[in-house]
Image 1 (cartoon, rainbow, N blue to C red):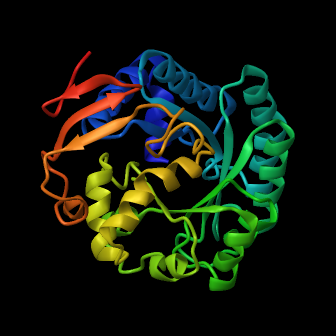
Image 2 (image 1 turned 30 degrees about the horizontal axis):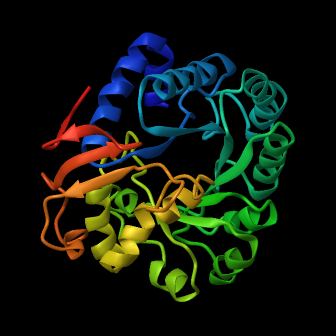
Amino acid sequence: METVNKTRQTTEDELFSIAQCRLDAMIEAGTTTLEIKSGYGLNLQDELKILRVIRRLKRQNPCKIAATFLGAHSIPTGMISEEYAKMVMEEMIPAIHQKRLAEFCDVFCEKGVFNPELSKEILRAGSRNGLRPKIHADQFSDSQAARVANDVRATSADHLVHSELGELQRMGETSVIPVLLPASSHSLMSEDYAPARDMLSQGLPVALGTDFSPSNWILGLLTVAAVATRGLRMKAAEIIRGITINAARSLSLQQSVGSIANGKRADIVILKVPSYKWIGYTYGEGLVDKVLIEGKEVVREGKRVH
């Protein structure tokens, strides 16, 4: 709520300026496609403000940005979950659909926030308004969020630290992309990490994300790679897939980005390393040499080119 209050007090132009600096840092760290979630407004006015900032970032930057509405991130002070969920479904989602401000709808399914039934209702309301479902799933406990993800056939499910293995296996059938966020566990000083090796043994296309947030100030996926090596026991090749093609799948963008192939965007990151196995071995400092987006150089010698 501290961040929610500060976000509400910050103007749209100020938010844009702050976000642009962070986005430049992400591009310099090698990111060419990213997802930005709202969720720190928790009312119609401020959720729309955040999503308008995301739209401005999309229009003024070469990278590809997916916008996710996460109004169901927490419950505002003085409200109960059912009351706020009704506001999300009946006021916020239709307004966002009308203004075409997001592609996805997300919900934080966890004990003390939104239960499985409410989460499913919110995601289905989003689907009726053209917003594809995503979910924050089982970060702190088994809240049955992985089951919700499978039931609504979500595009992706984030965290999955405490999910039932049976529901994780079922994702192979429902095509839900597991997005693991090991830097989040690291930043919270938790010893609990998602069971990546179990997922990989099931053949699931494991994706990795930064989970950049007030509690987890990590902007670069090469730093995430180092944490994934240690916390998730992932190998370099698995990590590379996790931050490229599988990450693209988590945004339904695998037809245009995520691998080098005819017809795809020429988004290429060149690193100053002797081998791909350095991804995960180092923590990412100073590794990026060049970044190309659609074949155009946007980072040279590690610095943003405008």
